Length: 505
Ligand SMILES: Nc1ncnc2c1ncn2[C@@H]1O[C@H](COP(=O)(O)OP(=O)(O)OP(=O)(O)O)[C@@H](O)[C@H]1O
Ligand SMILES: [Mg+2]
Image (cartoon, rainbow, N blue to C red; front, side):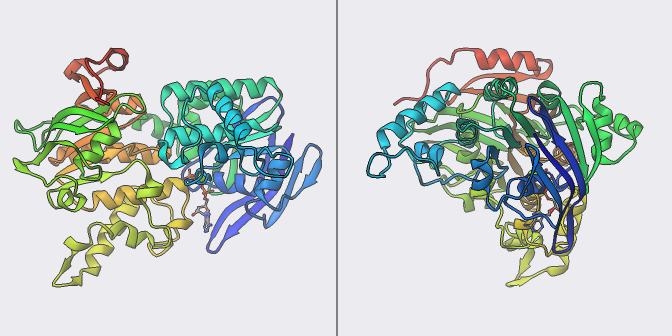
């Protein structure tokens, strides 16, 4: 259906793709995997007309093609969900779904009634019930991703490309997505699937191509390819070495002090949180469990002063923190790695170095002078530790691969040396190698006495990483798992339980 030969693409200073051959067959799901910065998104962008290749050929349905724009590729039947959701936040959900092919009436005007109805139907089929007239930005990241999916499958595509479609989806939505993928496969569509989540690949993909440093190092059927071997191909390390390290890096429980350093009491945010109380002790990792919309991110934001609360108190080491102020929270030692990295995160036009030092700058300056040597050391340490793939500390963050941008943000909040670290999906979009590194780092920080609040929709990560899990449902704490009760089973049961009373209207 779609094949590339000898594809090459360079950016100033980086060879993103060299001599890539790849064949995608009708009715198969083809996994495209590799470390952060391996070239996956670049390959997809070359295929779909976002970038022009420097060398090589793309053959679609038997004929060589070169799409000038993504829209041209889409018109030809190649539908793509890009890693960076490329929707328009201020436009309505319905408009985003139909962008570029809005239903029009006789005078050429957009037929809004029809557009709204069609949008509702398309989303309804994916189990998403939202007001399609509202601006897209009012939806959570996961729901936005479902809109992108609905948009991609609404057209009669012959190739559907998905670049990390599940990175912000909940298990239930992932199940819906997989249903859609199976349906597409049944219809003879060629699906290209990029993900860093191993279990997903084995569940849904038929074939796999592994990229490393812009080259294809393996291609073939996925069944029969051992998981450790796949990881070792991606990382370019020996199987034995990968096996010895294991796939998650959490070391187990931590020694925690008796007195909590973070105490949140009765946090209430109209419609979203209802009397949430929790505490975290120094050296403890507390997980926040729950489904999409259960109030996990809201809890973290309320604690960090990033979401105004209607009631409730936050204190650090016994001292009350002024509510609703991120600056006050940072001064008190609370730092938050937010979920929506795009809106609240990296500054693409600034360098890696500047992005990492951004939040810590006040503490790295004395009498208005910035301690450059210290910043250099910090930046170097984190770039190495988190394996940030960049030409150097002065490269613009906007030029890094998606996963590497995430790592830069993580470094920014770690460089603050907080007392309390709130991590909202810290390993989302991060490759297996670096993920283990991030998990080891979380452990190490806890061992150093940091209090960590961990939000992760990766259940394995939440269970293995947390000493204790507080489960939220509809903005209410419904249970707490401790010690031996921190298991996947118990978490699922707690999530399924009925809360005593939801947030008031
Ligand atoms: N616009 C750009 N300008 C300069 N370099 C770029 C640009 N886009 C990508 N690169 C570089 O090309 C390489 C491949 O990036 P790409 O985004 O394809 O990686 P990826 O495999 O999708 O990684 P991830 O898993 O993190 O999404 C990286 O070294 C990246 O820094
Ligand atoms: Mg990418």
